[in-house]
Every structure is written in C-alpha cells, then in structure tokens.
Image (cartoon, one colour):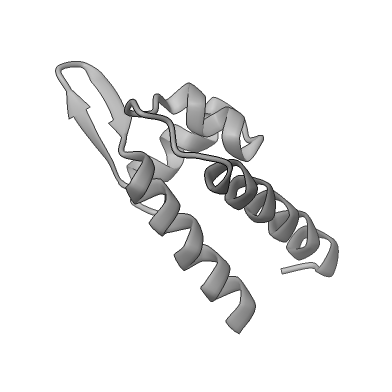
Length: 85
C-alpha cells in the first residue's frame, strides 16, 4: 500500500473512531450512515458487505442494518491491524 493511501486510510479510521467516541447512536445504522461515517461511496459499503471485509451487518427484511457497537469493534480491529502494519 502506498504511503499516501495508508495515511488517508488512517485519517478515515481516525475520523470514524472520533465519530463513534462522540456517542453511539441509539438506533441501528444504515449503509448510508456507514458511508457518511467513513467518507466512502455507498458502493464501497455494499462491496465490503459482499466481500465480508467491512463492519458486520444484518438484514431486516430487505434492509441492511449495522449495530453501532459492532461497527465500533470493527473500527478498533482495523486500527489495531493498521498499527501492526
């Protein structure tokens, strides 16, 4: 991974951690929430779900939702992996 790309990824993860630390919402998150939180296109969120590389989500009928606590745990895991790299 290029140093500039790694730096951008760290900034995105730090932003997401900051957002989550400021208080977890008291509702399940939508893919649009995840997209906004990480400043990535919505297509990226769906790609993460398809590849099982992003935060774990679940279906409610036709709709995908994310538990804020699971998203926070995923961000922490990504931070640890990035720090180890």
